[in-house]
Picture (cartoon, rainbow, N blue to C red):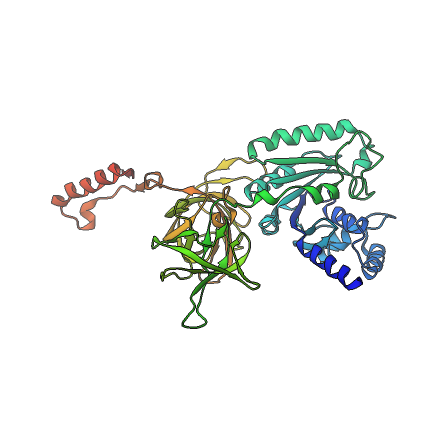
Length: 473
């Protein structure tokens, strides 16, 4: 009987869904303390971790006589010396209802790329605000980055309420200011919770010190927030990663389902060849199944012999992605080396790898003020709206609609470093491409005879007819 109970427990634990979340906030807002408190109060620490925490608190602690829960996450020596978070720290824990992966991300502007990395897979973001300071520049910056990453659920955690006497008016004022700022950023779900990470108010249990707050505690909210509909189950995108050919009688296409639902006997279209077929079988490690959904890794066999290789994509014939070489995207520069707009990069998009060229930088975004300005090249951690041309057509969707087919990275062809990450906005028509501004030149100095000047003018007029403006000064 006992063995059966253990098996039931393990089966139940395996079926729990997973919530990925990140914390963001200014320096000393209490991000690491909050997560440490969450782990401590939910009884998810082992005895040796508790012993180490008590020892480290005496040596490195910044919380006075209290246990410094931030030390559970700030593991680097430099982090403990300065009392700040530098690198992304991941922590894993689970409750009876859900599993969690928490990314504790740095608050400094110089670590923007670290926050982008930590938030790239997150379902939810906890943005901390110090109740004494309210909404500050860093709060706005982090909220903008969260909206850029397409994170649909945001918790505004107003921390250190114990230092303002648990005053409701202060909390309401911060909430009102934050919602006014966040409204144009199109974040669908914002929840505001007053708490004290150091004292444990509203972290795991609802606090009696704030009777005016009638909502859930932070942990209860994290356990119950609905994230099932966040994935795109409408648009089938199956980017082929590997052609599986163990013997002469079997030929399957292996990959992870990026979005949508793939069923047996579905009609499918292969891109870019536009060949049609039907799904013959869907095979997993546990055997055949009738359907597959994201993020399952499966092998698909088709009824017809179609030549498909890595980088190509299976979709439903009546629901196609955008196919093209020109698109614009929000780009976050992550390389120490300054961008060279004349250089060609590799672009890694789904299972595709090809060359890409930067056509134009439309504008750079100041992440602190959200102001847009002209820009010739990007430095580390800077963000801009950029137009690209790829070496071959890609199969993509806007990032807002489909994260998996709307995201990409740029790779430096010399160092092989990941130098930027991007979120696709939409395709770009040729008429929307940049204007070619030619300097004033004397054609005769180029060895062009006068009788050819008229032909050059005809070429200029034809380009203008196609929507490409050429200025001859």
